[in-house]
Length: 524
Image (cartoon, rainbow, N blue to C red; front, side, top):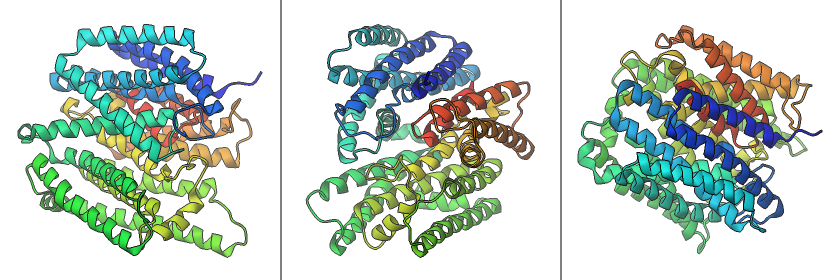
């Protein structure tokens, strides 16, 4: 009997949901279980729509819909954060975490409604299950959220609807339904929070300026991309005139909108603040020099591999081992930053994300002088997941290792730091993607023989992945004195093993999904 990878993936996700439920055990955790059950049934409908070509938009081929694993990320993340905030008595961020949980549930229910609305014949049983789960969630939300919090959730949902209509039309085959839910839902939440903070700028006087750079950078890149995607529908983008206009409009957006916006939010001039921030200590200057060297190494790897291809008579793609060079460079980049200076790493990751997004826009629109060379150089590193007009795997890799750093619950952290497995929370991305995924791919493709039923992944790759992550945890314990696992070693190993099993069976973007699930488990 052939094992269905989707069923095993769903079983792993259900196991993680139950772990969170047992640790939290409140009304919202029961709602998460109901959400997971209805998402599983709706995922089957989405998979059928993708196979028959009846989905409204063009989604990424060669993958299932991924609705269940994507639907549970935001709700579980909010529950884990809320538990930490309750422990330290931070009421404001406890309510904020609750809004994250409910927002994730509403986005997942909206995606379910779309699938049920376009499926023919109407799936009666799935509609009943989704109706019961949705009713339970709405009743709980009515009891727990205030009117202003409900309005905030509806604002995110409205932004998500419009953003999905625009980006899924402009970017066909770039996402599965689950990836669209996760990425566009996260961007919608960021946009709403940025608008909310901008309208109440006087309340930001005591806030850390560092936390405003990410939302402004993301919103700026989204605005730039949408504006030029619409503009270049009516004009040619490869001419020098269009390229000059692109660069001028980018400068206008940056200097005329984003810099004043940051000044309003941070109460400081952003350029002066960044200069003061990076010159506070010699350690920061040495770290920046070290990261610049690694960036040059990454460029050298790209050029060298393309030089080999041009010298060969056959057109070939980079091997798995070559692509994992970049995962190794990510580990070498992030571990010193996590140990020595996390605020600097936070800011550097934001700058790197903004640079990646901007360069991808340049490549996508063929903006001179870099657009055409970047298209040629990056073609070598494409895999089956880059089936749309955008190349997103390197951006997902950066997001995967950066999100645990950006999401570290600073306001809900005790003075002595997070105890137990929580001390490894900022390392979740490095563990899951930098170490685990790299070792699993390299060992699985070279020495793996026993395949997990229904997949191309191997038992040897998964086993060595878990072992390598445990070794990495030991190294982090030695290098970072702020980590104190106490008696939580078994929980750490179990969390790593569950996420490794998810990596073996998921067809979604593992660079994005795995760190978030490991983050949730370590935060409990």
